[in-house]
Length: 583
Image (cartoon, rainbow, N blue to C red; front, side, top):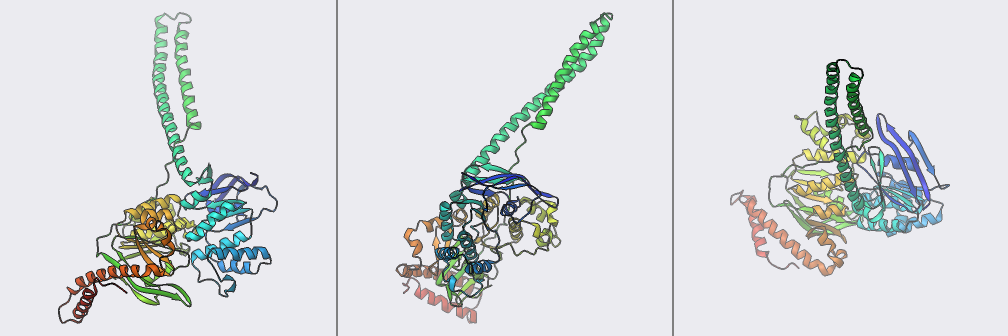
């Protein structure tokens, strides 16, 4: 493969922080390279340098192809309407035609006829527009920074397939393990400002990194044992040398000062001195040139508080629907969520996942139907984007350290999440998107919540943080509503699913794998041949849940009270209808 671009000794310094120290990287035609590293390691910084929008302090960028065209999907793009307008006005007819074809394949139709500024689109739809624009420009080098953030399964499958067919090179910054496994053949990791190269996909990289760590640790332990043996040997020789010098004078005196007697014993002592010096030099060489102890992989610990057990039912939706103007998101939908269930909310971009969450939280009104959520429940909510944090605040101010009586809890939490105590006074606008995301999660951890509602919580998080967040959510004993396109996380965390498909919300027991194994049913969740059975099953469960609730509530009142009579009437009606088929 021919080289497209080379980085040689690239260094980048922000203030006193040496983010990139000496980056060497070759990118060849048709290569698919995954760029990984912890949040704040400098991945986006390197991408900006390669694209040409950021200066660097030292080193060289060597372009091996004349007029090398680069396409760059940035991690945060708040201006999709500009891209769409730019493409619509493009004088390059073929590029404009390709753009519309791609947006149609990605499920964004009627684009050519839209006059609005596209602000009503979801985050995933905006990502699709930007991807379509970049692909239509036909670059030689693609730089994709978190391309799967908010992207649904349709967009993901399209991107995977297009990358397989793409003739140019691609540098992909991603924390999506499934996506990296499907698309790249090489992983480069930024660690402590330098690159480490792994020739394989993400799974190979994780296994190989572990193997390298264990190999280096073994060699380091053998070296340390050798150093200790040399040090012990030096101590022993030193004692012998001191004794030999002392005895050389005594033995020489015992020979009556015979010529050569004193020099004979002194020579023996000096021989031991030379042996000591040799050992010391060997020890010093090991100290300078020897094997360094491998650094343990940074561990991120979240740790949500345990939840005290509450009533079994925490949420109930009855025949809800939602319109945005003439746009119909979902309707005829009823479902329930029980205490302790970990429910994944899944569907295509623009189907209404975030709108459903906002309706549950009371931030968005429904067009019809009702959602019951106990007012006594404490809800922790993590929104989709970390970009809206107040950049003028320090971490300490955002976390409310001055207001927390025992700030040591905050400091301990931040250290466990990979921050240093010095960083508490650092402005949020100096942090990477992943570090901002960690701060949002940290504040959520400090709250005592019964329900966690998480909208794309893995956006911008590095791989290690994603894995630790997974483990934390698995251990959490409260109720979770989780919106994510990270299939690995859905499979590991969620035991129930709410699927938004064909403009209906359907509850599925058994988690994401049960949904995947449904085969042809995946596309038929809202079709008429399944509708009646599903509605009957859902309404039967809702009636039983409602009945249990009313039986508990009626005990609070006395016969004759309006609340008692109202509950009694509804109980009798439910008992009368219980078990009947729903038409």
